[in-house]
Image (tube, rainbow, N blue to C red; front, top):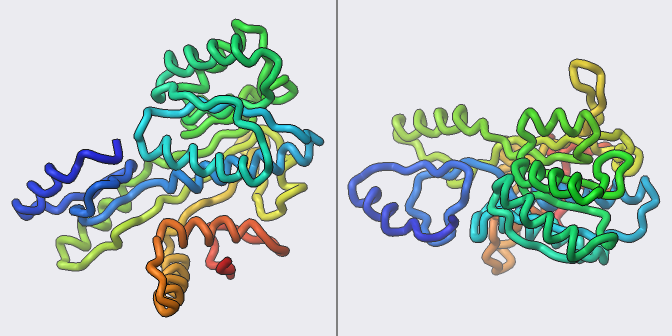
Amino acid sequence: MATGWDAVLTECEDAGIPVIVIDRTIDDSDKYVSWVGSDFKVEGLACGEWLKAYAADKGITEINALVIEGSTGASATIGRTDGFKEIADREGWTILDSQSGDFTEAGGQEVMESYCQSYAGQFNVVICQNDNEAAGAMTAMDNAGVTYGVGGDVILVSFDANKPYVQMVMDGKINANFECNPMAAPTVDEIIKQIEAGETPEKEIYVTESWFAAEDNVAKVYPEIDMVTTPTGKPVAMVHCNNCTNEINAWAEVFKGFLTALGQTPDMNQVFTAMFTSALQGGGRRRWAAAVQLPLR
């Protein structure tokens, strides 16, 4: 949950105990030294941009999506929901329904069973906000006779990209999977060393993340998306979404200073979101993880 943490963080602050927050964001307190994790809204935005490109290449002109959300109130749920909805609204897609599966396989199956009854024949996209929910959704669609994945009736998208589910992408059962990188420990170790040295670490540090697609057709639409292969030669699509490099952080500070000089109070989450989103626009081959020119909109 993103709220309810202020009391315990105040106790830690009063006791002189530095707190490092990992993965989920906290909305009701800033009494921690640093936060390390994923930009969940960027994950949702990336999902939407991929779906736009995929649909364009496949000649799909109408998107009718069903969303299985994560746990209500979780920052991952909020970010992925908001990011995908932003693209859906921009593109005029229809989100038929969006309900919580609580990040569980049982929850995903229960919600998908309800969807298969309520929206039979009406949907062509299912967005699951984690792999557990995707597993449950696949079971429900199998039982209802709905085909999904490469060549199926439904485009199936998942988040987290755990190893078994990346394999399902490679096998064509899941069309695309957006990573939630769990490898925060090396960054946390660096933060601890900074604290011990009397230094002040960055307040927010985003980990590098990739996403994986079953088909290589997206690169035809967005050349900035890198097509790579697995060790067995199967294609996957990869794009890095991070702002933890010094160069990109420096650009963000430049934009922040510019906005401040204009009398505005910039929200750094909005600054980074604008940078990453605008990096997908324009000509040339751009990579989100590179120190490239990111235009301010």
